[in-house]
Amino acid sequence: SPLEVLITRACNPALGEPNYALHLEVADYINKKKANTPREAAMFIARLVNHRNPHVAMLALALLETLVQSCGYPFHLQIATKEFLNELVRRFPERPPPFPGPVMQKILDLIHSWKEGICVESRFKDDFGNIRDMHRLLTFKGYRFRELPRQPAVATTSNLKSAEELEAEDREAQEAKLQELIRRGTPRDLAAAQELMKTLAGANPDAKPDYRTQALNELNKLESKVILLNEILDNVDTTRGEKFVQGDVYDQVASILKDARPKIQKWISNAESDDPESLNLFLQINDQINTVLNRYEAYKKGDFTAASNPIPPELSNGAASGSSSAQAISLIDLDDAPSQPAQSGSGSGIDELASLFGPGPGSTPATAPPPGVMAQGGGGLGMGMGMGAGFGGMNMMTSAPATPAYQSPQPMSSQATGLMGMASQPS
Image (cartoon, helix red, strand yellow):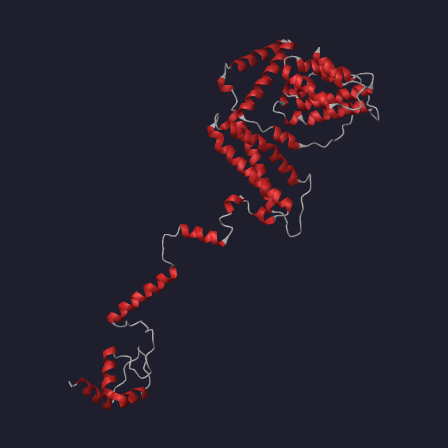
């Protein structure tokens, strides 16, 4: 078959190392054909793993690892069957050797990675119970599994899907599971296949999952990553010259957001016509991701001023210069007159009113009177005294001590009384 030809080319012993271009070609063929193609590919690769030539077996295991990463649930369901797992470990002895060979060690590594990967992070992990059982059985017999480093960022990004993508993935998984149940043919499997066909036909719409809520939950997880990166950037110790290196927590969280940004932008373009209700939500999360990534890039470049201010540059230009900020304030100021002249004008108006009715009891004159002028006298009285008294009267008044405005008036002498009488007589 064409599938066997592709797999044989990828596992050709003439190849010195795995050819990942041929691996991707096999994966594309499986994803395109579907139907029974995933099972045929899995069983044919399992037979090549038990090849007499160890090099062919290693090439087949490398191809198997690539297909698990590139193909979806239909292929994962086939590697979780008892037939495939038993064929994979068919050459394992009852008692494990003290130093397993490269082929045996690679098989142990793959089973362990599946148990820690798709059996934990997949949405259909309940269908992969046989992998966990095989891992437990090998552990019971004494086989040891090496702890391999994993990258959880890839799994976190791959789980970010829209409601339409989640529904399409569920339908594809149900179709693959239905085909597997029919292939087994046991009464129990046929009964489960009948219920699954009702679900695919839409006979029970109430049991349909809420894919929109599931998609929003994934967006909430992504938003928590944005908040986390903002918090750790706020706590960066710039005084000690803290630097970012590849692989640290800053880089891990930022890589998740960078991988999610193309998906969010694709959803925005689709939501403009298909889902206007979710458009504002997608735009908001996209703005948050762009802002925090700009802060992260500014920190990496050493620009701590720009990193501490998350406001975009196009919005902060108006407040950057003093003239523009003053102009922005004048735009909302409805009073055309400046505040200082208004205060002086109001004060001069009060002074003019006070001059009409005389000084009030608590008012203070702008110019202090000479020390000899009596406080209780008005302006007219002072002028009359000055006109009629002459220089002698002025000398008398200037010789008297000054009296504050709030004290009682002093009794006048007879000479002052005479002067007042002379001033009151008509000329």
